[in-house]
Each structure stands twice: as C-alpha cells, then as structure tokens.
Image (cartoon, rainbow, N blue to C red; front, side, top):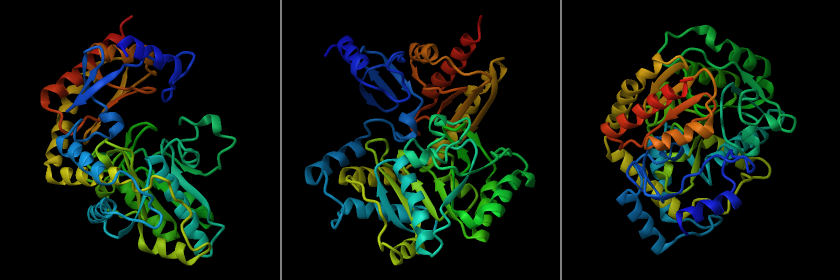
Length: 429
C-alpha cells in the first residue's frame, strides 16, 4: 500500500481506541521505530514522548530484546499453560519474586493490565469466600483512580470524572474515598486520610479489598500523592483484615523513581498488579503477585482452584522478552536515567507555568504533566505536536509525557520545547 492507501483503508475500516467512527481524529501511519523515534510512512520522524502508553522503557527495537524474541520464536512461540510449563515463564516468575516487595511469592500471569486487575479483584473475592466470609465481596478505592477498561475494572475507576460514566447503572457500586490532597513533596496532613478511614470503619465487614494506584494516579488525573497516605492505608487494611491491591500497571519498573511505587512508602501489598513496561513494550503481558496465604486459602475453599485461565497465559514469547527486559533494566543505570529525565522535564516544562491557560506543572520521576484550565481540542493539538516533530497524546485537560528512559538531553529538550510552544500557540486568539 502507498501511504495514502493505507490511511484511506484505516479511516474506512479500523476503529481506534477512544475514537469516533463518524468524526475520527487524525491517524499517523508508523513505518518503523528505533530508539526514541517513530518513523512515519510519509518519511517524517517523531520523538516519542509517550513510550507507547508507558511501556517502551528501553526504546524501540532494542537489540537485546529483539534477539531474545527471535531466539524464543525459533524454539517455542506458544503452548497452553494448563498442565504445562516452560523455562521463560519460570525464569520470569523467579525474577519478579526477587525484585518485588518481600512476601509476594505467587505469580499469576495474565494477558494485559486490565485483565491483571480483574484477576486481583477475583482473587480478593475468592479469598474471602474461602476464608468463610462470603459477605465480604465489595471494594474500597479512592477518587480519580483508573484501573482499566474491562468490565469489573471500570467499577473501581472514578465514578464521576472517569471515562466510564456510560456504564454507571450497570456496574456494581463500590466505595470511593476522597482523592488524597497532600502532594508527594508536601508536609503530611493527617486530615487527608479521614475520608478513607471513615469508609473503612463503616464498611470493613463487607470489604474484601482496597485497590489503588500507589503514589501516582494515572489516567484518572495524573495526580502524585503523599507516601504517608499509602502507609496509613496499609495500616488500616491490616487492622480491619482487608486485602490491599496495588495497581502498579503504570508505575512498575522505575517510572516514579523507585522500582515500584510502593517502595516510596516502604509497604508490601497483598496483591500486586504489573503490566505495561513488563515486556519493554514488545508484547502484551501482565502479572499478579500474591502472598502465599491468599493462594492457600483459595485452594482450601470451594471449588479448590482459582477460577481464571487465559488462553495465552504465560505466552513463551512474552515471558522471554519480559525476562530480558527486566534484566536489562536491572543491569542499567535506570535510576540515573530517571533522575536525568526528571530534571530535564522540570526545567523544560517550567516555562508553561507562565501561560494563562496552564493550571499546574508537576513532575515525578520520568513523568511530566502540564494540567490546563480547559480541555484540549484533540483534533487540532495532536496535529500541531506532529508538525513540531514530537509524539504527545493529551487527554482532557492534561498534556503529559513519560519518555523512554534512554531519551537523551537534546531529544528531551526538543520534546519539552514543543510542548511549551504548542500550548503557547494554542492560547493565542
């Protein structure tokens, strides 16, 4: 296909995420990618500020990961995981148990981040059933959260400002504490945990789990909250016998400046959901890590097994490249890279604070956020970024970036300058 033929067929037949068929956004055809650059089929190159929705932490077409995938494909591309196992799954599980908070000894592989959250929620429900407390089958979370687009995940996403209001009358109704107000670097205020504490006190007898995104609330608003909030949530869960599910789909593997965001508060969740950067962006794969007691209680109750089993669970290709990606991260100076990105994002986005259209600029680890006072006009702003030679995908009032860790200083400067310039141009009459 020519460039024009490809885009014409795409417009006619392909439904993109969060996109209208009758009034679609512009789509840009990618021919290849390397490092931090996307090469479009019309010859233009874009510096990728999104790491393909947080996942491509090592950059595109990394030689180690590509070679790993090719070598694994020559041996075993897929085999069912029911009754069978294989070395890539075992080695990846070993790595995850080694690097995650102590006590998370069981690994359940899933297809995607949303499915991992579904799995963790099912585990919490089945754990309470196995423990003889079937009435404990509801969840508590915090407002402005996002946990995925599959059906039960939507029930714990923000019910008012989230993306899923359409399903409000169909989804189960759970409990939502006020969003934490204390920012990551603020002085802690005890009042911040009051709403959560009150809901826990009132409803613990029916709660099987608390689910939240540690420290960084992603697609629900890109808020960075105080580690003490997370510490106190852990204490309350222990006191009332409620499982704590940490959704680190977006924050896992170094994005926030710690290997896992839970580490900022030095807490261990009962269930930990991982995804996105797990494979370095090569293939879809996710994992749920659990305390052994959870598996034992589920196995001792009816029906004696955990009721979940994806067809492509622990796909060998995905497990092999994930294992290589984890090792690549651990062998690198990822902490130095993330610190450099944080400094570059802080300096590069600082001019946005002077714009009348900007409400706030905030940075944590390799995450940079410009929050606007009004929602962006996606049709216009997306094209403007491409014209500047960068790939940035805003939503709502948020223009945010989370670059690959390997992005160098000059490319990061180009990226942040483009953001500042486009936002300055957008506010002109």
